[in-house]
Image (cartoon, rainbow, N blue to C red; front, side, top):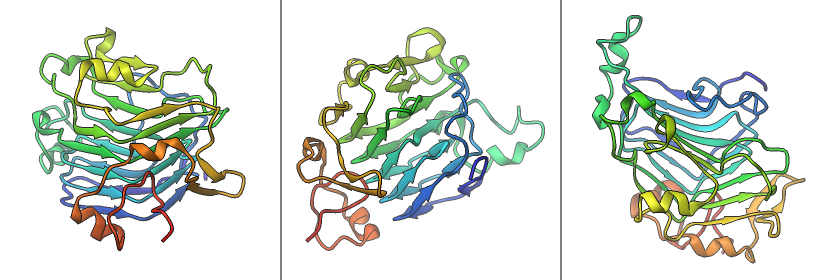
Length: 261
């Protein structure tokens, strides 16, 4: 439903879990994306000013934002499938001292310099021919660039990005912090991110419209074809994540659907 909301873990949460859900139609995916400020309210999974969530095994379809991680720390994002649903991780300078309305909110979560440590692994991010947004948005305001120069992610690999529109002028990833203007890099390839952070995206891949990953978009079957070459990007999961997902055997797979036995 346009302008609706998904699940919002509000301030002060610790070790939240969002596992094996289907989230569809949250917000308005046709709303223009503001490149210098994410919009938090219309998100399938919103985790704000909190610590230590696990978001795994979920499918997000046609959501304004599939996930939104804001001013939080140590969120583990594994095995999710994003279909026309941007994934956003962001931080700003909000503190008890500068928040006149809800100063106590930011005191319940990590301090400004602790809003990092996220993991983003084995996710599939896709956009169809009509999708006019980046697939991933990592954001902080340029006023924080000198103070916070480390990336928000501590592990970022084994993901696959897929766009049907090969000639799109829309960036694949918006990334901060960066030495580019406004502290933001508008990356059109994975190489641009890897040049800044050589430990990221080593086993990740980006595909365009010559190879289809899903069994049937028309029928809403977002299981990945076994023949899709992006499957080779996946890695084995930590034992904790395997248990939460209910997987009987730890095998390498991409996105929300484990391979059939």
